Structure formats: C-alpha cells, structure tokens
Amino acid sequence: MPYTGNNEVSLLFGFSLINCWFTKLSKIVILILTLIVLYISKNRLISESAFNCAIEFPLVIGFSVLFMFFLTSTYDFFGIYLALEGLSLTLYVLAGILNQSIISVESAIKYFSLGAISSGILLFGISFLFGIVGSLDFLEVQLFLGTSSQNFVLFFETKMAVICILFGFFFKLSAFPCHWWVADVYEGIWSPVTAFFAIVVKVALFLFFFRLLYNVLFNILFVFQPILIFVSIGSMFVGTFGALKQVRVKRFIAYASISQVGFIMLGLASCCIGGLIASVLYLFIYALMSIVFFALILNTEHIVSKKNIIYLSELYCFSLYSSKFAKYLAIVLFSMAGIPPLGGFISKLFVYIVAIDAKLDLIVFVSLFLSVVSTYYYLNFIHYIWFVKFNVLRLYFFKLNFFLDLILEVIVIFLIFFVVVSPYFLQVATNFALSCTWPFIFN
Image (cartoon, rainbow, N blue to C red; front, side, top):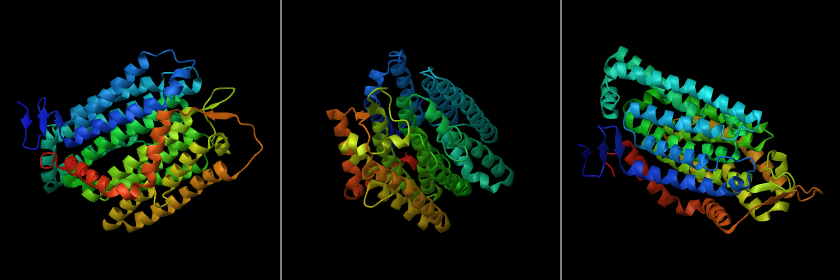
C-alpha cells in the first residue's frame, strides 16, 4: 500500500516514486517550457528542408519529457539511474536527428561517448552507496547519512560514493569540470534541439539536483560545500572567459550558460534553505532569458540562404532588421549582465545576499569580478546592435507572429518589473524550497 500522509504526499511503487507539491510544480514547469520551446521553434521545424523525421521528432521529445517527469518523481537511486539513462538515450537520438553534416555526427558521437562515461561513474557511485548502506531508498539513505559521521571509515566511503554521484550530475548539468562537451555539442546539433537541451533539459535536471542535495544529502551537505564552491567558481571562470573569445552564437550561449550554472551553484554552496530559494529564482530567470535568446536564433533567417544567425558579427546593426526584437534582445542582455532593476540583477542579488550570510565573502568577491568581466561583452553586443551603423543591405528578416511576439513581450515586461512582483515569486520559491527539503512536513 502506498504511504499517504496528511499533507497529500504519497510514496508509490514500493517507495520508488514520490508525489508532492515540489514534484507536481516541477512537472508543470517542464511541460510549459517544452511547449514554449516547440512553439518558438515552429518556423524552423516547418521550413527545414532536410527534416525527414516528422513523426520521430515529436515522439522522441515526448519520451524525453516522460523520463524527465519520472526523474522529478523518483525516490530511490535505482530510479535515478533508470530515469537518467532513459533521458540520455532520447537525447542521444535528438543530438543526431539531422545527420546531414560531419559536425552534427561528431557532436552526437561526442555527446554519446562522454555521456556513457558519466553514466558509468554515476552507476559506480550508486553501487558503492548500495554496498555501504544496503539500500537505495532515499529515506534509508538519509537516516544512514545522519549517523555515518560517527564512524570515520563508513563516513569516508559514503563521501566517496556521493562524490561519484555528484560528478555524474555535474556532467549532465554542464558544470565545471565536466563542461568539455557543451560548446561542441550545442554548435553541432540542430538549433531547436539546442534550445531543448539548454532550457528544458537543464531546468529539469536542476530541479532534481535541488532535491538530491537538500532532501537526501541535507544532513551532511556542509561536507560537500568545498566541492560546490569549486564547481561554482570554476563554472563562472570558464563560462566568463570562454565566452569572451567566441565568434559563433551557439558557442557563446553554451559558455554563457556555464557561467549561469556557476551562479546557481553559488546559491547551493551556501548550504542553507535561503541558498536553495535564491538558486530556484535564478534558475527561473535563466530559463526566461534563454527563451528570448533562442527565439532570436530560431526565427531570424537570411534572405537568400534561409539560414539562421550563425556568427555574433551578424548581430551588428540588428536594430535595422527588427527594432522591436532588438529592444527585446537589449533588455535580455542587460538582464544577463545584472544591470538593475532587471530580473537578472534581482536574482544575482539574492544569491549574493545568501552567500554573504553564509560567510563566503571571498567567493562573492571573485564572482563579482567575473560578473564585471562578463558585463563587458554583454554591453558590447548592445553597442553593435544599436549604435554602430554600417552601410549594409538588409540581409536578415525576423519571422514575427502575434503569439510569438506576445510570449516575448510578456517575458521582457516580466524581467523589467520583476522587482515589483519579486515578493510574490519569493514566496512561491520559498514554498518550493520547503517542499523540496521536507516533502512530508510541508505541502
């Protein structure tokens, strides 16, 4: 019989799945983001002349969403492995869905090879943990972790097993030092699939990663604080300086996303509920900014070649092509740079407040320096988009329709006035974090 508490939290299939407020809201977020990504990719899906898998593509996307639902609800480590492997298999297929070029094939092979290695390390950690604890159930693992610190040998072995599991997740999240694949894979795969990877998959993985850290490992989370700090600073450093030298749009987005992962990890490195709340807010703002950026790539075409924007230099004088979308893009770039009072600034401010409260002053100073460096190229884009005037022909046009324009306008207005609505979303993020950490107590 499934366990059902007074707070409408249920454990199903032999304590393998959990159904609580956190998992329900996570599934809604994943579904909404998937629909938005598919809609902003609609023009590309229709116009792609080499697209010969009109049936397979939505089917694989559907299975990907199904495995993400399963991952958000799983409540044992065996379920984690099954969900991640199922999700990875669908992502491998999506990475090679258009094998028309050598770059696409190379990206799919690279993603498959490195993904297999990370899955092997994850499975090794899970097997090691099972040998120590004797169970893969989250509840029993939590109880064991709360008492293993009294035995040095058991505590050391448990720590090594958890590090292997975290390493497997760092690869999936494209966090330092497991970020090698991101730029090459994002560059080589089909643009709608890149958007799906960068927005939906990353958000789903982070939502479960929150629960893994703050629900399962909360008793000994302080032990892994140095690892989280190392990953955070490394991600920000690699993402910031890696993006400086990029000339292609998708490679730039890849490195920018690595930097954003560093800020999310900084909130988690505080090892408190406030850090989880700040990371949830930052993840939400990151997803919105990414939607606008990918809408640019997927809906701007060259008049002759019908290709999307490939190089960052093609953004020069973009205000001549579409002044409305140039305004959207400028606001999103300001938000990514952390310019007040936009949503990106508010989310960074929450992360910094929590990190300072956790006595991570040096880490905050380093991240502030890297944030100032990243501001340089964000503002440089705005300079070229709006203020540099060349005598060029209008070579690109933006496929703007009513609903796409409505989606982008709502997101941009939300980013501008986020400071006004932030108390409400802070309350939602607080409830989200409490349900993540204590699902049987809070609903």
